[in-house]
Figure 1 (spheres, one colour):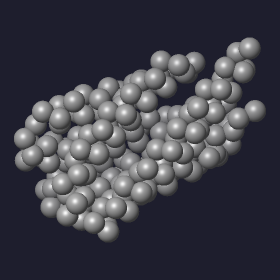
Figure 2 (cartoon, helix red, strand yellow):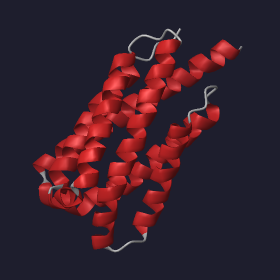
Figure 3 (cartoon, helix red, strand yellow):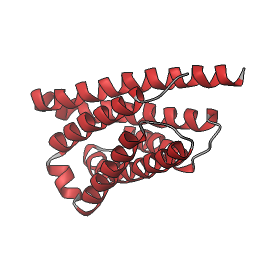
Figure 4 (tube, one colour):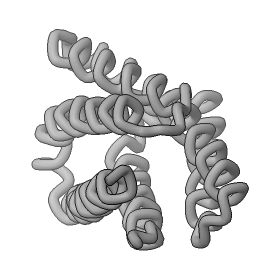
Length: 180
């Protein structure tokens, strides 16, 4: 019975991961093809995405047998940031987003590296994609922490690249999930 619950949970996680990955890639592509529209709408999409992302991580943490504090931290940070950004003025939103995106990328990267290590110790295959995604997130976070104004000036490009590569990494991670 416990194995069936785990399989159902893995199926749900895999499907949701694939859907979110596809949406991330589409949204990233829209930024490049409609920059003015994207500039007006990206903040609201990003806020909604942050809240959904955070709730997803909190649910995964609550339902997972292996508790990873970084996963819970990423989820809580994303939900709090999303709610705060809803009530902020546009300039505050932009500058807050630059720093928070950096720290969310950092905690997500740490979470991915930790999860990759745990999964590898348990004999899982396909953990290299998760490890690579974690390393990319950490490098991106370091860049954004030390160059926040680059983030503000090039938000469209950086957000587009982040969403596209993050979506591809999430898609690869979701596809590598083995359901028995």
